[in-house]
View (cartoon, rainbow, N blue to C red):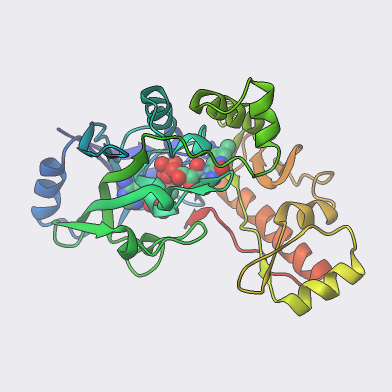
Length: 336
Ligand SMILES: Cc1cc2nc3c(=O)[nH]c(=O)nc-3n(C[C@H](O)[C@H](O)[C@H](O)COP(=O)(O)OP(=O)(O)OC[C@H]3O[C@@H](n4cnc5c(N)ncnc54)[C@H](O)[C@@H]3O)c2cc1C
C-alpha cells in the first residue's frame, strides 16, 4: 500500500519537535509498492526519513519525503550458533531489540532504547556501550531512487565506521533502505566493559540478556532526555579526534580533560566536556540549550525553530574552536 499526502507536517517525524512541512509525503508498506511509485517517472528532490531522531529541519522541505512502513521480520537462516534475521526498515528499533532479547538472541542488547527505525541503523551505524549496528549487519537491501532498481549491499560494501556508512558518503541520498539482515548469536557474548554497565548488570543479579537490556535502559534514562518529553536528536556533535601532539598540548593546559587514545595514534576527546567547559550548561540561548545531564545533547526548550537550533549549535562550535582550537562536527543531519 502507498499513502500520499501534500503539504504534510513533519512534526510527528522529528524528535526535535520542529514544525516543518514537506511538499509531498509518501509512505509505503512493500518493496513492490515503492518500486512502482519510483518507476513511474519520479525524478524530484527527495529525502528518506525514519523516526526523525537524527534530523534537524531548518526549513520546509520542498520535495518528496519517503517513509518506509515495511515492518515484517523473518529468520532467513539458522545454524547451531547463529541466526540471520531480516527486518523491514520501518520497524521501530527498540521493538526489534526487545524482540531479539526475548528470543534469547545475543547482539543488539547494548543498543537498547536508541530512538528511530531499522533502516537508519544501517545508514547511521548506530552505536552505544561498545557495540555498533554495523558489527551485526550482514546485508542491507535498498531501492535506488533514480531508477527504482533493487540493490543489495554486503557488510563490507557498507564501509561502516564510527556513525558512518556508505549511505552517508558515496551513496548519500540515493537509496531507500527496505530491509536489513542482522547476524545474531545463540550463545551469549556480553560486551560490558563500557562505562558503568558491568556494575549495573551486577546490581540486577548478573549477566543475562534481559539484565543487560534493563541496565542499558536504566543508564540511558538517567542520562538522556526522553524524546517524548524534551525535543532533541541525541548527541548533536561527534566526539572530535585530534593528533597526539595536539592532545598532549591540550592536556598540559587542561589536566582534567578526558582523552581516549585510539589504535591509529590519534586521540578522541569528549565533545560534551569541551562544550561544558565553554559554559553552555548555564547559558541557554532563546529557547535552545544543552541537556542538564549531558552537554553533548542540544535540546529544544520549547517552541524553537530549526534556525534557532542551528544558530545555537554554530555558536557552540565557534566557542569550542575559540577556547580549545578544536573543530566540532555535527552528528545530526541538518536538512536545509
Ligand atoms: C534521545 C536520543 C538518544 C540517541 N542515542 C543514540 C545513541 O546512543 N547512539 C546512536 O548511534 N544514535 C543515537 N541517537 C540518534 C538516532 O537515534 C539514530 O541516529 C537513529 O538511527 C536515527 O533513526 P531514525 O529512524 O530516527 O532516522 P532519521 O533521523 O529519520 O534519519 C537519519 C538518517 O537516516 C536516513 N534514513 C532513515 N531511514 C532511512 C531509510 N529507510 N532508507 C534510507 N535512509 C534512511 C535519513 O535520510 C537520515 O539521513 C539518539 C537520538 C535521540 C533523540
